[in-house]
Length: 358
Ligand SMILES: [Zn+2]
Ligand SMILES: [Zn+2]
Image (cartoon, rainbow, N blue to C red; front, side, top):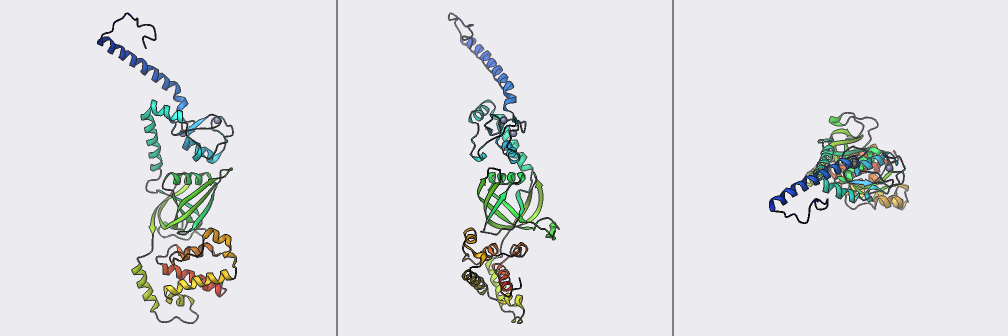
């Protein structure tokens, strides 16, 4: 460096001592340059949305650069650049690459600051929820193994879906409790407390920002506690499953050995039917309705929900997905603890349809 500045003559002989002295001056000079560079670029590497060091920077067509997460949140609300207000024609953010040069520069210049920023964002998102760690979407009813298609346009729910995708790809869906019926310990909350855990299979963002989400029901759960995070619901949930098979068999033996029910006692009669007879009742009904080309069993319905499953445990969920009856009625399946109990619910629907009491 001194040579470059013309201060080091070719005739000067350097001993070891002098060389190390020069090295120090050299280093000091480098440090000065570096800190000046950092100082002058500081404003340039701060995100104009969160005013922090950019994390995973993405550059728009108008040339402005923001953190990927900040840009995503801006895009939830508007398609105008927050810096210059120009329209941001931008492909779906998942397909937009990070600003590689800037990432390398920041990682090289201030790796500690980058790491600290990443850590802070992670902590911020985790602290935001505490043990209310499951996103909850109050919308409609969904069942295990069945597909659910959602159209998500509100910014807060688009944020929820994005975070679910960053996590394990799952979120809980609850049915809206329009009559504010009491839900156990939770009281009269705006949702029914049994919900379905959905796994996101596919998402598509339309030009207007609407998010189409295809998901499949994984398992049922019950909400133990709930709260709000950035406008969408979050909760602490407990998985809800059937009792063991032995217990189910015990219940069946007990119920089928009850004294015969009266002629007009529909519920009593269903209650005494063997489980295999309840399965047959459902399958026969579907076969008869298909033969009659019932509206609710048209091809487009089957394209979405599939053919009736052979698995008796899943049949009621499929049946509820295709049958045009009220959601409140279908919700009766959510709190069941045996396959038999679910089949009794579907049998009661069939009997009511057959007797035209609906
Ligand atoms: Zn930012
Ligand atoms: Zn711009």
